[in-house]
Every structure is written in structure tokens, then in C-alpha cells.
Image 1 (tube, rainbow, N blue to C red):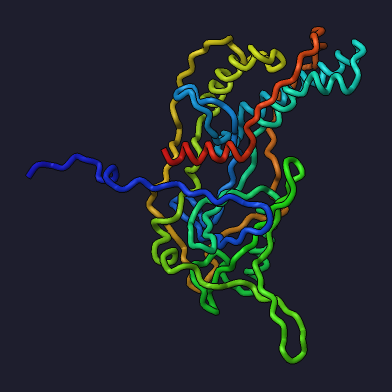
Image 2 (cartoon, rainbow, N blue to C red):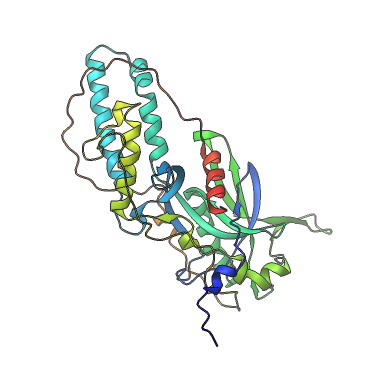
Length: 351
């Protein structure tokens, strides 16, 4: 009998990436158990995500994982620190030329916008189920994640149960959370609380609140091994050196439109050809290791006080040099916002 050399995994249906979006107001989710061989008991995964750079191998913009997450250093943070030093020197030079604060702000508008967009965004990814029974990836900002850690810790203390359990028994039940969002732009605020229902005593009229421990849809309970996502592989990972070459390739084009962005060591001229190899590809199909909950606490949680809103990188900063006089230029901005970038990520994941 001839040996079958075909990789049978290639015949399996492609798994569609589903991502939950936190809308304005209330968003009810059940956060699900640790999933995948590298979860190590944690129901979430921290990522520092780089947006807005073009992948030289495809010519398309895509999100990348900052290597600070897995190598402890990142060329993006290093470049931004050097660029901020340059910007401060430019501000001083412009002021010495007699430019007003408003003129300086307008002159550097495009550069400051670029800095805010390139800075890696800290997110915490969970497997989550909404009330309609859809399992997808839920990405939380640091403020909401910190609150979730506090709520989960309190739930464990109060019930001695796993808040991410797939079960809904009296002695072993997960709980539904309400993720909140309000405000717009830089004023957007994210929060979290347990989803609760108000109960009024018919005799005394006293009001109390009951945690929502209602059951998950049956299909989620039975098929979580196939519905969950390995959170360690949802963003493309590059090594420090590969990420630096991608940054250089992008800057070599961007500097043509904004000379402020040129920093020694991160620029080699337009038309640069960069070849990179992916360290780890995104992978939606894994051999799951799932703790469903069996009356015990099957998860690990970090201390909420240890949650940092942004990662930092230590770099050696040069002594600021005075910037050459620059003729004020009109600022340009990129119309893509965070929602556009998330849509872009969805398109990439589901190709």
C-alpha cells in the first residue's frame, strides 16, 4: 500500500477569525477558560501591537507584534524615543526663531500624529462568548483588563470558583461581565463590571443584585475545543532585527514626505528592498488544552497593580542637537483610525 504523504491538516476547513468589537455603552461577555498549549493557565494574553506599517513582502499594511513582548526590546520604541528627542530640539530651535507656540504646534502636527500612531498599543486578548453564543477574540485596553482582574479575584474569593468555567452549576460556574465604553477619541474610557440583575424583595421592597451566572449556549460548552483561539498566535511575530528592517523600509518612503522622521540608524534611502522571514505565523488551529472547570480554580491571574498601560524601552539617547531652520510646512494626517485598523486586521486574518 502506498504511503500517504499528504498533510491531512491541509484538508481541514479553514477556521474563520472572529473578533468581538466593544461598542459604546454595555457589552456583555463571558470570558472563557485558558486555551492552547502555551496558555500556562492564563485566560488572556498581553500584546504590544504595532499598527500602520507596510509589510515589505506583501506591500500591504498589517499589524505586527512588538518583539518587546517576547525579546524584551523593540526597535519601534527605540526609534520613537530618539524621534521625541529630535522633536524637542526642533521645538527649541523654532522658538528661538520667533515662532509662536501655536505655529510650532501646527508645524509639528504631522510628526506628533505619526508618533501617536506608531507607538505600540497595549492590549489584552481573551477568548470570549457574547450572549448570542458567538465565540471570538475580545481585546481589552489596560483599564478594562485591570478591572477584570480585580473582579475575577473577588469572584474567586466570594465563590471559591473559576470565573471562566464553562459550567453553570451552583458549585462550579463562570460569570458574565459587562465591558463598558464611553467617550470618543482620546477621551474614550473603558471599564468593566459583573453583569448583574436587580432583585426586589416583594415583602420588604429591599433591593439586591445577583451576579449573572446563566448558562453558556450548549454548543459552546460541548465544542469549545474547536471554537477557541490560541491567543499566543493572533499577531504576526518578527524578531527584533526583522522588525527593524521593516521599520527602516517604511521610513525610507515616509521621509520623502516628512523629513522630520529621519533618524540616523533608521534610514537608508527610498527604494530599499527588505527581505524578512516570519518568526511565528498566526495560527488559528491548535491542539487545545482546555480547563472547563470542575469545582476547582483552573486559572492564573496577574496582580492588577502590575498592569501597565504602555510598555517602555530603555535606550541610550544622544545629546539633542539644534535642528536646522525649517520652513513651516502644512501638516498632513492619516485618515485611518483604530476602527479602520481593526477592520484591516479582520481582513488579513480571514484571507
